[in-house]
Amino acid sequence: MSYYLFILPVILISGWAQRKVKSTYAQMSQVKSSSGLTGAEVARNILDANGLEEVPVERVAGELSDHYDPKNNILRLSEGVYGSSSVAAIGIAAHEAGHALQDFKKYAPLTIRNFAVPAASIGGRLGFFVLAGGVAMSIMPVVILGIALLSATVLFQLVNLPVEFDASNRAKEILANSGYVSAEEQKGVKKVLDAAAWTYVAATLGSIMTLVYYLSRSGLLGRR
Image (tube, rainbow, N blue to C red; front, side):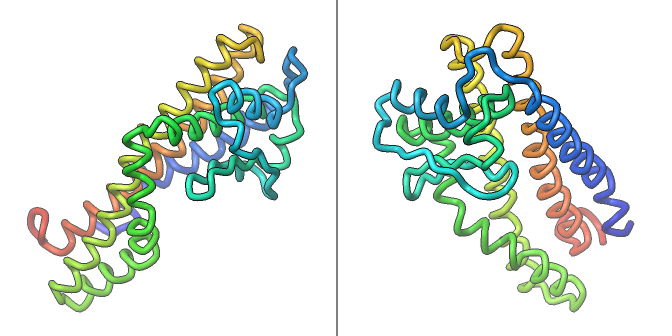
């Protein structure tokens, strides 16, 4: 079976997840929160309320480029989130603040994820090519090296799932108890964060299925 037939279900799920998160974000970006607070203000309030006054909230270019930088302890929000008072902006800002809280409270999966980033970065760039080359030339040591590199990416994705889910759960709980959004607006926040969660699931499935395919192709998993 060809690689594309093997991975087709993941490609379809990934495409659907990307469309869903973009459409949900666009929809909820048009819904203004009753509090009138911007994403930056919500993130700042959450951080300050949890003793993280030293963590700056900065604006970063791009769409949906929001992230928390654990190396430099900086929370960065995209232009569409930083100054927006939409339900989508508040949900995303609270999610990223959730990552800062994880870091502050030494949330174990986040610590593991941060440790795995260098290996996953190298594995993501080189693993596919090393493994494909090893399979094509039937050189088993190269195949094993490629599998090891791809495995680092798979491990990162598996650890990343609970990290992202936990950050979203923290955001939902904080927003539900803070008054930053109304009960009805909380439903919009949930839509945005749940849609984003599917992109993480799709990325994890893609990494796993790619590894399984090459394990099978190399003969290390089942028959050639």
